[in-house]
Image (cartoon, rainbow, N blue to C red; front, side, top):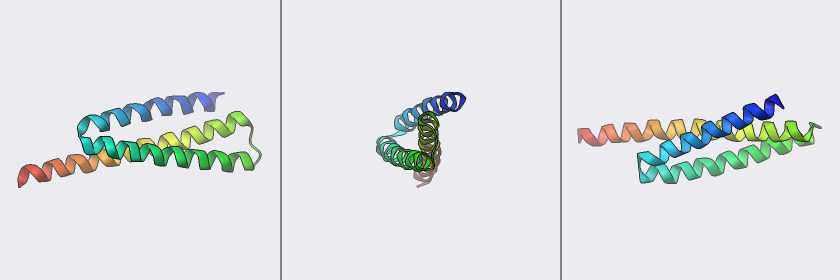
Length: 93
């Protein structure tokens, strides 16, 4: 159950990161959706692998949710970094 609680916290952080990325620009909104789709797909895949290895249902769900959330968090951080860099380049030209 602790692992499921940690996965829930990671999901909340991932949602907040996506909202912040969407506030930056329209490109951020579109890329946030793409990252969310990648995170959901990866989370499902990791959960399926955990299930096939014989893990319990709760553990499988927690591992899948955590993997998807971490992917979304990392993807949004990379998007924000690139968008800020692009904004700085635009100011110089």
